[in-house]
Length: 474
Image (tube, rainbow, N blue to C red):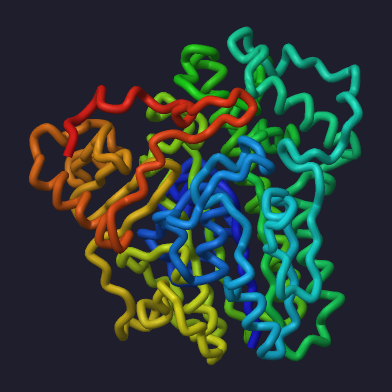
């Protein structure tokens, strides 16, 4: 028996057809969902990229980040609680399966996991990082002189983080000649190669992790034309914190949304090619296949197009999760229970009949697929920087861990989280916050500020509204 884990970064659940989207083309994920159990309420337990994956591969919670300390030597990019290397004491999925005799491989373009000391490669017989994604320090030469930066930068973006990111990204991608050289195709092509070259493996674990449809959003023209044909204006593929309408027009924002949709469709196409290779090699009959996202991505719905810690809305929090069992167990079933990323490891080990580590926070999801038990949580929690998110059947709470900037949303009347009702329900706010403390097994770390070592001062999380201006203290 084999396992394939496919992680698709920044994929919003509401941008996939099988999750109810009617205008974005995701035929391959939709077809896969018909043979899979579809989990309607999958959420991260911590954010963003690295903390989410730490939970996936250890089966343990990363929130509430008690052991995290900012390391000056690692720079501002690591000024995120939970954004830390896997520890020497962590027992990972790959290490467990390698010890159990599985051939293991990790193929990705998520460069964050291969920065010094991150340790995500441990336990893999083969691991390959495809360099150059986003602002990976891959190429030190200037971008090609024929790149028209004005085409990608509105006046409000000049000199911002987006401007800097563009320069590095265009330098990184000078090698491209066609669609097969884009990052998602490169990742899934590596997966197809590995399967063919390792067809003699008695049993294997393959982890494929695609950074797309994470920004920058620059798919080939064929995909752009699916969603905004004939567009001739600026293409904002990197954005900056803050309200996008302050630095781009509504028309430019509409096109940016089209670019994200186009990236989703490109990823879907290459996932389909990968699944065709799985079928061709006869692996559908003996392989558990999981497809999941680490988080979504806001596209201006709450005045941000960046993954900001205060903006823990459904656009960021709702993750697709599809699990295809080779015996058809759960095929076509829609699972409504709350599940989270740390549930993946125990689910995989349960399928394989491999004993989990002694300490594990996640729960086996296979019983939910059979209808014979499984986790029945009445709430879920997640942490991102200095913020905590709590959701139950009716409400969502978003708060700073110091109990300020509190917002409460009524999911029955406001599923998109646009109307704060915290002032009207102080008792519910208190109850929800206490659930976060319960899951954290004690008072939440305050993280009152994060050190900017380059300036030698404390600074609030970029993009934060002023704490205390909205919603009552608890």
